[in-house]
Amino acid sequence: MKKFSLFSTSSVLTLALAATAIAPMAWAYDEAPMLAEMVEAGSLPPVDERLPANPTVINAVQPGQYGGVWARAYRGPGDRWGPTKLMEERVVKYAPDADGNVTMMPGYIESYEVSDDAKSFTFTLLEGLKWSDGHPVTTEDVEFWYNDIFLNTAIVPSIDPTFAPGGVPMALDVIDERTFKVSFEQPYVYFLTILAKDSTGEPSLDRPSFLFPKHYLSQFNDKYASEEDLAAAAEKYGVEKWSDLWGSKGPVTSWWENTDLPVITAWQIETPAPGDVVTMVRNPYYWAVDQEGQQLPYIDRIEHRLFEASDAFNLMIVQGQIGMQARYVNSNDFTFLKENEGKGGYSVGTWINASTWSFVPNYNMEDEVLRGLFENRDFRHAMQIALDRETINELGFSGLGEGRSASPISGSPYFDAELETHWADYDPDMANELLDGVGLTERDGGGFRLRSDGKRLQVVVEAYQDYASPILEIATEFYADVGIELLPRIIDRTQWDDNRDNNNFVMQYTPFDRLSVVAADPRNMMGSDGWANQYYIWYSTGGENGIEPPADHPIRDIWAAWDKASVAGNQDDADAAMNDLIATFVNEGFVIGMVGEEKAPLVVKDGFMNVRADLVMDDVTRGIGLGQTQQMWIKQD
Image 1 (tube, rainbow, N blue to C red):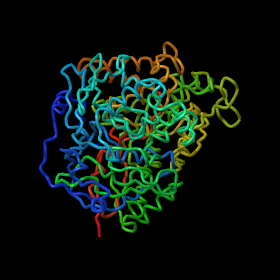
Image 2 (cartoon, rainbow, N blue to C red):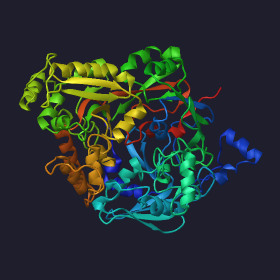
Image 3 (cartoon, rainbow, N blue to C red):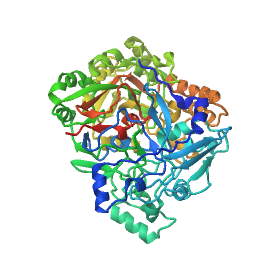
């Protein structure tokens, strides 16, 4: 397994980066022909007026050509995060170095500084930075984000603990038109790490750090608009109340839906979802150039075509209809895709998946009997060791992964070999003993165990990937061998998300990710948006909402570890607490990890350039976005 360095966890390098500013460049900037035509027609200012005074430089693998349409596929309106990860921006962001290791680089800022005590972080925006509509980006947008959105409980009902270490939200001081300081009452050594992953969080889809376009969004904000105007806007966009306009699914703040929303990303929406074809077009005011002074991105448009079944997607690939894509390229189809490379005019590369395909039970499910079983550690142990992970890997993943727990991947600074194999060995005899030991001794005529209420022990598992069916069938057989009836359900992604959001599921099949730089987003392990979301809501709202866990529940130890890590005075103490958090999560076996660290295949059409191999694929590093899509290009005839 390829090792990778995570520089963001080094306090020495973090401080070195903090003192780094982008050196002025003396270039005659170049631009895409489609933009040059607009300049010639008088509908767009010249490129040197659109770019910042000193634009950020993204070193392309090879300086490229302008033009072309990047052809992709998507699964419907709910498939919004895949396209989003192609173009997200942060004040600091993860990027690969020359060796493919994960590093951190500045985004749309000129410089940033971290205080010696790691309590304050000062950022200076690029001079001349502009939104996609040409409006200047200033600290007025930062103040708008902080005062009118971040602290507005109508939009953000509760502030996530990752932005309020010690229970106290971050504070903002605006210094001048381009410079602002964010501070905390205690040290926060993980703050830049978190910014590079999740930015400043909701309520938007692309989530630019600290920035919301005040000149546009103030009309939808209760600090500026009247009740009548807000009610009219809610009616116009088809939502119940004005605050529903905001969020990753909000029709106003979701770039995926709103063609009028100003952005700072390399592309913006042109033809929004839903539709058979969703199109993104280049942002003429994008603030980065390559090493030769060419304004990025190289590619004019990104086109997403709708598909429903994996067979249809594979047909698109072998017919040469996909430019470059990793999302929905299934490792179980690796051999088939390799065999058809010549026919489709593409090649199959691989990245390294920083996730473990897992069963994620819902510890807040409504079924009290089944919930009680999952809360029993011996029952969880039995559910883990009843699975033959090696067989699942061979038959379901073409042997491209390894049987493992849901734990940090090798190469992560938090990797632990013992945790990786915790409860991962196949032992049906012990599983049967454990199940008998928790009182599940009675069986029905089909050989399945009976619950305490006399019902058959059934576990419904939901997946949104139709290619998951063979994997679920294999798991069904293993669980049947120990008297548990697994009932797989393949459902639409939108419904899958809604079930999770509304606490309406028993168990879901999904890649449990964020296993590279765990400190960048520990919330998966803390229960958020997954295995114990109602517990996490209780924790994050200070008990105002959600469900309170029992006083002796191990999730409280996980939260306590994060509370300690988030206010630690130095990196070593923070990492020690983070390792305690991880160890508790893995040792308790809350999530049933199966196969991980598999080679993640990606399809690259001939002539699609600057796609690097063997990078880390993780939600933390923002998926394919780690490959810096702005510098990818398509050979033109």
